[in-house]
Image (cartoon, rainbow, N blue to C red; front, side, top):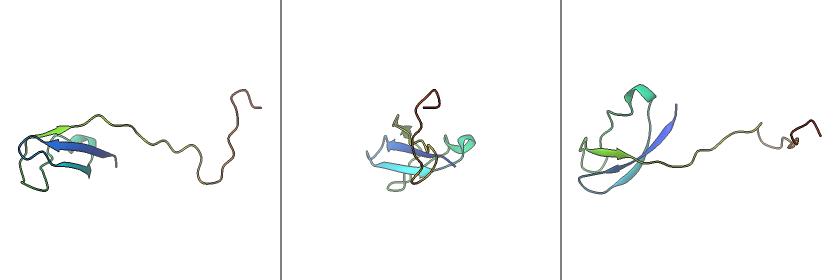
Length: 61
């Protein structure tokens, strides 16, 4: 399940919440309980094979 970052439009609280894509519009602020939150655009992490896996350059090198 993805983690989305939000900022409350009422109190300014920034928070992250793990929520299914179908419910990401139904998030409320954990500080003031307002439903007026804005989803923030952030980077994402990509798992490229697990801990300790060697990197293999494109082309099979």
